[in-house]
Length: 512
Image (cartoon, rainbow, N blue to C red):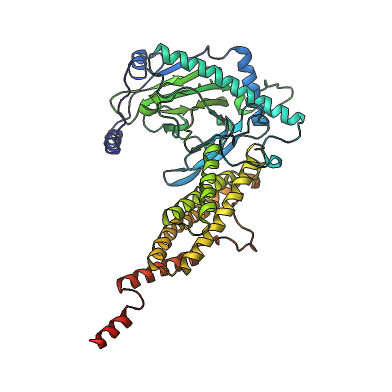
């Protein structure tokens, strides 16, 4: 068993990056393809924790998964995401949908995706059994009237849970065979799959070429998957989208995917992260094959997806981070804030006010805005998440109201030391809120939204009704000005010994 290498420090990463860029200035880096001399040795020596299999999924299951993929496409459940790359927001070429355990989410490149729950959500949405806030029965997810459309939806989602189990078993066997993991490391209990679809022939702009090795057109650039449990395995299942056969008697002009050009195969590019000594490799992936990034491979290597000529589905199974990215987590944060309110009302200590403001911001920017960023169509398609988001918005409104009350009480407090401490905490926290709202307003006003249909454009939520003055205003500038003035006044009074200092000094001098 090979021990996991220590993670690179930021300085080491920057040194490797500079070395790579310097070499790129003079030459193109080497990569090997399957069948070339040295390919197999390189695969075994430097890409040992990569595994490809054609036996993970049987023929019958493969066709059921393909049918489920096509169902997702027909129901328009795939979305292009507008993501943050290199400081700019850009739409992805790939269309994606997240499926997984009830209540799981997956953040990537500034976007949080909310999973369609695989299996029957009518029996798996009870997520508040461990002391977390209860949601009234009439607002619980998964209790609409049963109809044929819902049953079909749930059946197709179940196909991905079955696929998940097949990949889990194969990953477990390979981890044991290669002696790559112990019982307390990583894991392959996949909790979600990010399902992807890309048809290269239907892209509005040409795909970019891979820049370092000359590998061809990129569907997904070089990267390491983020927000996963450390040292956890990633399993990917690849399927071609089968198209109807071309009938010249029915179609006068054959579409582009019936071109007489030889087809280009899909490939996965693999390289050691920021390494110029070890050549990269390009691994072909065929219809119905699975491949795995076992154990620490995702931490020590980077991978990319090189586009073929056919339309492609892929189901990428991961063990998501459970500490911050699940519904039980954010419900527990709401419970924490409610406990503060029930004990303290508006009379918070500075640390309590800071905690409440932090939870208020997390709800707004990491959950509510992220959900509505994906548009009204996405919201309609999420029967599990809608009632939970309603509950989270109710909590946000409540916390917002209590923060407004805290600001009012703080500004009126006669205790200068306490007022200064509280006002400074609220000032810092609400500065963060104002900054994040400004950044989100920039997202909402991006010119690229003109390319999207209206129900796939972001919705600005949460917001209060215009007539509702019980909470903080959307534009916090006046509140911040009042808090800053109070901090400055209290600080000035403390330096001068308080507002009565000058009068007391004069009186004392006269008495001598």
